[in-house]
Amino acid sequence: MPLPASEPVACSGRLPERAQSRFTSDYPSFLRFRIVAPMSPHPPHRPHAPRAPHDTHAPQVGIVVIGYNDAAHVTTAVRSALAQGPVVREVVAVDDCSTDGSAELLTRLAATEPRVKVVRRRVNSGGCGSPRNTGLDRVTSPYVMFLDSDDVLPPGAVDALLAAARGACADVASGLCVRRELPEGREVPWQAPLYAAHAVLERPAQRPRLVHDTLCVNKLYRTDFLRGHGIRFPEGRFLYEDFVFTARVLAAGPRLALVPDRVYVWHVRRFADRLSISLDRAGITNWQARTEASRLAYDILLGAGQKELARAARAKFLDHELRLYARELGLHDPPYQRAWWAHTRAYLAEYDASDWAHNPTAPGRLIGRVVLSSPEPRDLPRLRDLASRPARLLPPYTHTPDGTPIWSADLPEVTLEPLLTRPVRLLPLAVDAELRPRARAALLRLRLHELYGRVAHAGPEALEVEWRCRETGRATVRRTTVTLTPSADGIWSAETAVQWTAFEAGTWELRLRVRFRGGAHREVTAHALSGAGLLRRRAVVSTRHAVVLVQPYATHSGALALRVAPGLRGVMSVVHGRLRRLLH
Image 1 (cartoon, rainbow, N blue to C red):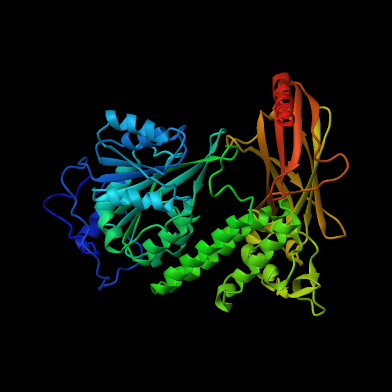
Image 2 (cartoon, rainbow, N blue to C red):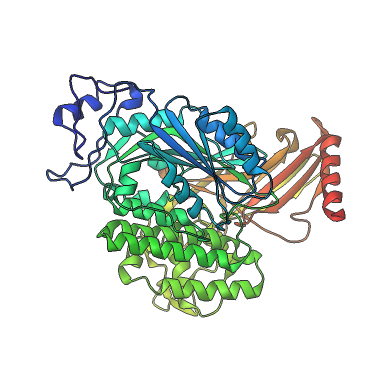
């Protein structure tokens, strides 16, 4: 919706005082923004954004779609861009020298849709940056978006972003991206706290957490802003090019508009023949590329004088990148582990004292300090659980002779003393779980560990137990509450029965809530214990399904989960799947 013609907004980087009040009250909900933090009376100079035209559906946006050997999906992506309506002036489809007929499919589509422009690169670039730059050079629209060939734009995405950008005279408008796990269809919001409500930011430093959203695809950019600041993607085979591009955008100090609307669907195909860059983490080169992109992002922000954003970028590396890869480290062979450890130590050695000072017991910082303090890989299972979400700090719980909590006796420099004052709702509590399947039900045994006296002081009273389906997000019939019983060795124990009739087909994750005296609580997952009779597949009897195949297992983060295939058909599908894997 445009602003009233009688009250045009001069897009000079600041909204007139009267216009600010109108944006927070007079406009419909989808255009109500929250102005974040007092604006500087002397905002930095920036080129004027275009004044909002009267016709809200006038063609304003160019969408750059890139693809390589993705004939199965590329036309679906392009059609999702075209389906945004007349507001899309052009869809520039850049084929990165495909050999699977992708370019021919795009050419046929362009013959029936004049808004589609097909650009065929003569040489494959090996990455995503070069084809995006090629598309950006071809765009003639005032605004531009980027779309990957295996993803889609949901209905209304462009309208929501364009309304926000024009209404706030923003250089960049950004919205919610969801990761859709295929083939299950489960959707997980990406960086959801950033997009909880409409907001306008005069400058990125007002919300340092923006550095966590390194995606370029859930954003609408003013084309002249990108070109005026020379903002482009790294060329060639440069993995994680989004990190660098986003840092360049933030370093230029754009005015931003954030919207809670879903504006991008990121398809995650974990079992595809060709994994995406972010999922293909088998080799050490992926980790090396990720750290290099993170280093460049930091340098770009620091070089632009964005010290707070640069510091936030380093914190984001510890909280996201380091935890993600540490969680999977135990799955790799020893040569990979040694290479990863050495490379990570060298990278973290660039951090200064202030990078470690804030929130010193945050899981990523603890993992980083352990890596820096040890020349060789160590404590991988313990680091894996600490890297999980929520974090779990497994025993042993060691002290120095004067009683100071430390990581281990041979790493006394890694202190855990700040845990003594951390709120109980944020403590990395450890709960062990063992599930023993029986004929018609299973026995779930849970043990909560003491943590330097903090658990006893908080007074644990009960555990709330819930199984939640990963594919659908649904919980089992009801949440069970069991009383915790203390023992002399600093353990609180509980048991409960698990009825197979409550489960449908799928993967079920165990979620726990530890309830303390006075109403405090902590959400946790449970560390899966292994041993005789545990984590084994078996067929059990169910009054609802006759027979159920159940498989307790430990996730990559070490948490207990359960795969369920109810009924004879479900059992046979699992058997057939295993046979296919054995024969191929």
